[in-house]
Image 1 (tube, helix red, strand yellow):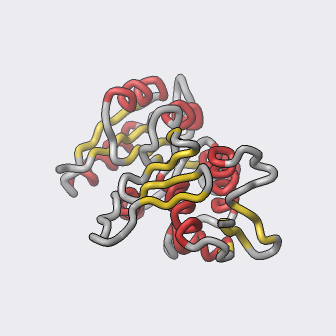
Image 2 (cartoon, one colour):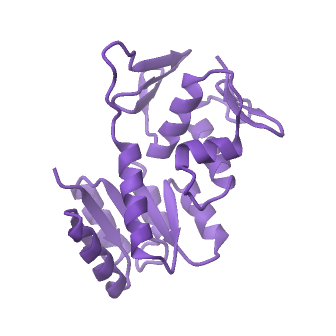
Length: 229
């Protein structure tokens, strides 16, 4: 089945170039040129990835991302201004999985889209593998890639799930921030360890009763993070 991508940018030449390039790889591409159009398309269609510019008419990319996150965990890659670290951090805070800095190379865009698609695919479980991990009220299903607190589903993004799954599979093991960045995002990822901190903070807000006094994901000061069994 062909992969489906939504490209959102008010610069029509950029959209046209991305669309042409992705269609060369047999992807189905929808295009939107403002925030409202993006929200309309996202609510009516199932996408494998959304490529979303920050600066848009009607609604900003941050607002679009935030609204989509209320009902969907579709992977979102933000397009941010060159050197604007605040855009990158805000994008992650609002629920984006990744970001690409403008101006970009179209080959990088394609590589990042394919990488996030691969990581978002449900893993094929082994015949004897238990697809559920649970500790206390927290439970995840590694096949469906869903998380639950007290049997109520928690809306986790692809990267949030990857982080939580890794930590839960190795309870009490302390992972350094660089190690988490390399393992979950990949060695080719151009971001920094603040990406990890933002995602850990968002995870705590979703799974912890008291995020400032966590029960599950703990900080080893000066070292990194670990899941306490």
